[in-house]
Length: 129
Image (cartoon, rainbow, N blue to C red; front, top):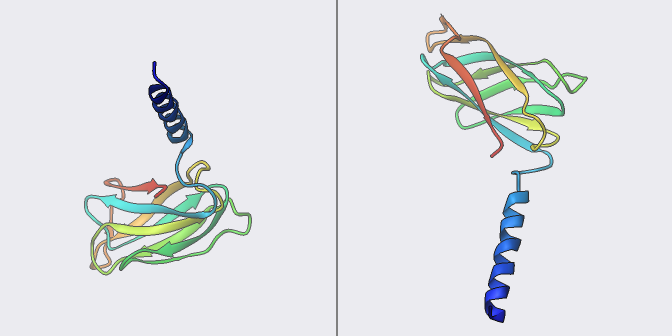
């Protein structure tokens, strides 16, 4: 095996090791939350429970009203409102984005006419973007 081949092999192993160690973003920052399903809501109330939750933030045309619980673990009650029935997006600020994801439970939802809709067809999806 030539010296060049050995260097390439070692470089390849180093890159594989580096990629394998990258589990995503770390440290404080936002998690992305989306309320999706059928029928799409224009507003929802969610409860967020988990460690290191610092607060909540709006995304796009969605408005978010909520506060972090004094203990930092929750449950935190959050109101998410959009301009129309659509996928509702919001951010959850956490101490460490690599930590276990919080549990988000839909309490209630409304359509664009402010009529209650069943939450059984809805779900909250979280990501560490």
